[in-house]
Length: 448
Image 1 (spheres, one colour):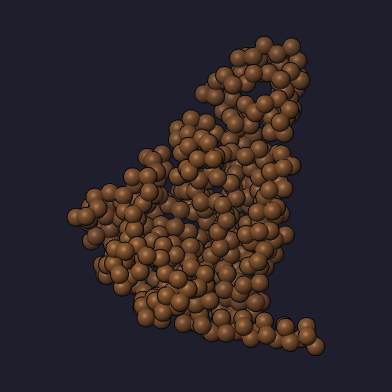
Image 2 (image 1 turned 90 degrees about the vertical axis):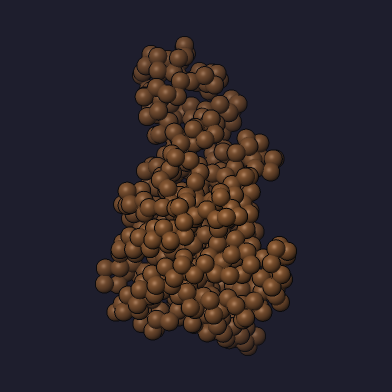
């Protein structure tokens, strides 16, 4: 009897949450209810389905938790739970409905997560593009972990158990996004960091699991070709087994053959990495969709995408962010890069973080690439959205930043849809309202 009452209570709670978010999922119930978000393909179009069986497209904005207290401009005061509830009822609910937003994106305050669907995030490894200090203990430190080390695997399992498992039954959670803009591409990462994941494994101390894995890889690749290995790598090994103790800190990574070997071993790293992470994800939460890493467009090598394919339901990408000319800018839809994501993984795509900014009188520097002014930024955003949703496998779009706030590390302004004083940027907002409205019309017309 107690179990029955518990299940009934849980069901009623779930229904209440879904009703609260109903205005942000206006499509009729046409699909099988499963209790969690899932994927479907209808009329040749990939789309999400809500827990209660409605066609759904994720349209929203990220980083809501960073919104300052609107009624006290400039104070920078963060809202508590009660304040968030009031702010939702007084401001956000109407704005989101008017702007045709269906999702809170990721980075939403916990107090709002029953109001509309949202995305969970977990930083699997500290390899995000914004990290620049090669000391993990520093504020901005990064680290390429030894993914072959059983100790690392144990840490991953503990991390997912701690940060993911408690949300496994949340019907408002759409799915999980992993590390934000991870550094995978060897050449681009070397340009940014002066090192890369393969080079780190290559120069680990003898006996470490990653070094052993790298040596075993080369032993297999150069079986009966020790002379070639010595020539290509500038070594004088008496046997292939000597690789395990050799000094590999001065390998000429610019040589074509070495680069080819490194690309192949990156695939080995990726397969091990995603197998460990994917299993930990599914063990901690078998109910929700997995969107994988939030790839920066242009930093998702084919072998990495092949490795993640068995472990994700869809693939997430962030186009641009003014990191480096090595990557395509946010001002145009990166068609080739996103087509590659779709083709290699065979999965539908989510634009998980994006913006097109412009300079203002108060802030000449902004994150994401700039257009000259608000009008041209709005035109570019309109063209971007049209290109994105022309793809039949596009699951949604999440805008970066609801409200203006400073960015760290001298990067300027995180420019939002709303200015710091609470005033919406109507020219930009109009683009999203109209584009999202058209997307919703098409989504609501899908037949089961």
